[in-house]
Amino acid sequence: MASKNGMLSSRIFDSRIKSANVTQKERWLGYLLGPAGAMLLIGIINTYSNKFYTDVMQISGAFLVIFPLVSKIIDAITNVIMGRIIERTKSRQGKARPWLLIAGPLMVITAILMFTVPNASDTVKCIWIFFSYNLFYSFAVTIYLMSKTMMVPLSTRNTRQRDGLAMFNNLGEAIAPGLFNMMLFPMLILPWMGVNQGRWIMAMAIFSILVVPLIVMQYYFTKERVTEETRAMGETAKGEPLSRQVKACFSSRYWVIIMAVFLLYQFFNAMYNAGAVYYADWVLGSYNDGITMTLMSVVGYFPMGPGMFLILPLCKKFGKRNMMLVGAVIAVVGSLLGWAFADNMVGALAGLLIRCIGTLPNLVLMSMVADAMDHVEWKSGIRCDSFMASVYTVISTLVAGFALSIFNIGIDAFDYQPPIDIPEGSGLTQVVQNASMQNYFVFICFILPAIIFVCVAILMAFYNLDKKLPGMQKDIVERHKAEAEAKGLVYVDPVEAERLEQEEFDRIAEENRVKELKEKCEKKGLDFEAENIKYLAAKAEKERKWLEKQEEKKRKAELRQSRKKK
Image (tube, rainbow, N blue to C red; front, side, top):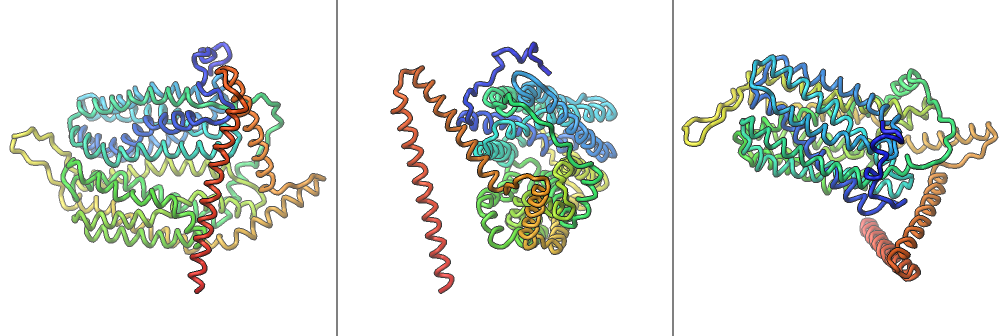
């Protein structure tokens, strides 16, 4: 990929970020706004492609059952292959950034192909759908997401700066595309498209083309500082054999429980995302009414915003396992309430709201995965992070296809009737789904989630790692200390090593800041000392306000504790 004599060796392709430290432009343009277009397009197609196949193209039968699962198997394989390709890429621009530029036009072309299904026989339609779907997901999206995912760890070794980029990256993935998918798309665009294929193609073409300038922005305002480092590399660790990692993980009941819970959550999300649009169209509201799906999305996801800030303190106080268990019970109650009032707007939305509150502890699930990995190490003596990451990726990918296949089995079995395009003033009425079909949509949105969260609650009842973990972690540290002493080495506690490493990163960051400020002052004829004093004063003021805020929090906490004792 693009060696020193390749196209990307030209300076025109160089990053616009020159600073050795992460900048505000980098955060906002490279990690928030830049990825928003691609994530928006992927989110829309994730949510509405199946609706396009059933309602617009009127595809049914075994094809809709088989092709999603086969496609996700292909997707899982291409993810592994693309990871290896990126790892071996060498170019002036890095190893992940160049693939962003390649992914942009590929996503445009393949996304449009997904909706330009020819008006031909069902066989021709199915072949077109299968190949265009895999060109988009297993090829274009895989290239983009794999390179995008690697950008944060490749951006800098400074953990504080990297954490900030990760936060902006997560916001770029979730908030802007999420708000659009939840509110504007079902309210304004979906009713306009209806079952008219031409309008679907037009809308998707516009969303696809918007991706390119934003990905170009993402490319130019990101920087692979880690890749650019010119340091001598020592011999890399070979790691534990895969067979030993598999045995170690499956010998830990906590790891098995957490992987099972993760699988259940992924299955719930995939099934609900597949069925919610149909439930809104045929049970709770009317077809593409522009309101029902928007209300379901807003109410069903609203608690996630404040919940992101509340769940960590609650888990710290009551324990992650207890919060997961209580959350699962609340989610069951919300699901049953929604089922009881499935055809009533207020009752159904209340059920979705309560269930969303119950799913908030899921935000700490990855932390529980890390805890389970500590138990694996404590029990077996080895780390199995690479195997865990592989299992995580495979579950995420395959469950999505498996869930869509199961959902489409019901679509076919209960005789789903595609809607008709009703001209204004024709006097025609929209089709009505039979009672079994409507009950199936209710089952997918409320009864199946209740069953899933009952299973989560049962699994959490057998998960009691929280209290044991501190002792296990202490044993692991003592074991590493003994191993180091046996080799004649000085053991450094990981926490202390991380602190010293961070101090070194901060020292280098400060040196780079001073150097860049001097260059800026020389270029613009400014007084370095005066500009540096301004910066230090602003930094000190910011730190003072932060300390005051922390002291105020501490004072309020002590006051609450005092009142509680009284």
